[in-house]
Image 1 (cartoon, rainbow, N blue to C red):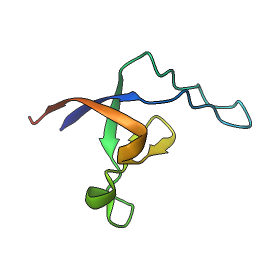
Image 2 (cartoon, rainbow, N blue to C red):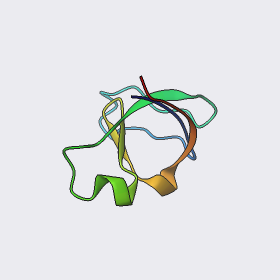
Image 3 (cartoon, rainbow, N blue to C red):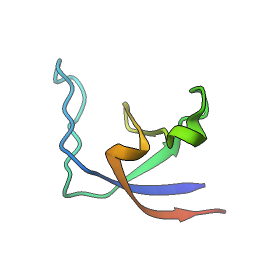
Length: 64
């Protein structure tokens, strides 16, 4: 399954060790299946960032 999302805000790690997420770009994401209630909460991993359903726009889902 391939998921494309666009963050609603710019996200940056406090330590700057991870690349920032730009709200003007579309990114690939994966479902956060290792998190409790990941479907209900809409949790996805975008790189090293864990985002909830209110923190991104869903652009596309492709089921292989």
